[in-house]
Image (cartoon, rainbow, N blue to C red):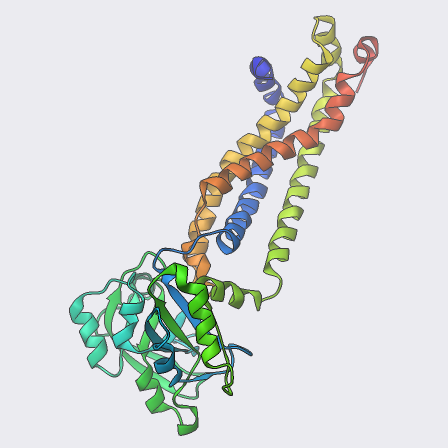
Length: 383
């Protein structure tokens, strides 16, 4: 096929407008397909960052909507291999307008940065967070998005919790991932809540000493509360994120079905283009045969044209995918695996492979028909 590359390029330029439209449609479809593939890879094949591999989440076994008593923390810390345990409470609420969506958690300030060693913050800001009851810290990404500065007042109007939280920004942390989260003090939230809702939390963050001990520690933590009124389900932080995601529905099937629909749509577009291109060149095929070109040679040229157009579309689609992935990565960290989303080389290679396969599949029927047509019939053909 490569020996006929000059002829393939000439054929692609036969109708510049049609080729440009084909490449453009392929690039758009493949960029969307590549974004879905990158998301799928991040959810189900991506590896957790090293620090995340040391963290587990213990939540209510029945549902994340049900709380756990805060005294579970001391029992969890007694499990061999547990370095630290920290209760945390998800706080929804509204910041100025409902459209301002970002994660907000009430935590224990003295344990937050020990468990999240991947968060870096100046020591004086860390101390201020531990001393000031109404203090809060935010990620660098969130601070830049809303223009937050040290000393600013941040008010959150509760919805799950019927309270208004008035906070003072005392620190800004840096992180490669999850840099758009707000943390404030759990004891401050408890002070605002009625007695019956205090000392109950959404879950516990558990820091372990070795990723290899994760399965054992999770099992032992759950065994501690096997006969308790509120049983726990403890799992690696990454597994918890995927479990939380599964509450939205069968995300895996959704991503796969949309990917198949995009592939089928691209197949139809490319097949239509190649059918028109081959129909216009039936007489040329007859001329090529009179010059000694064999059926396999003609078939390879026609297939090469389709593969070349979709491959170019795939390369452009990879560039578009990288842009879309960067935009998705900047979305609020509600679905946490997306905060580390990126176009992996393996995903880009698979996307190019899919592009070439679609190109070949779309051209195989018209190309095979044209390559096998007898010389006299081809020369007499009129469109």
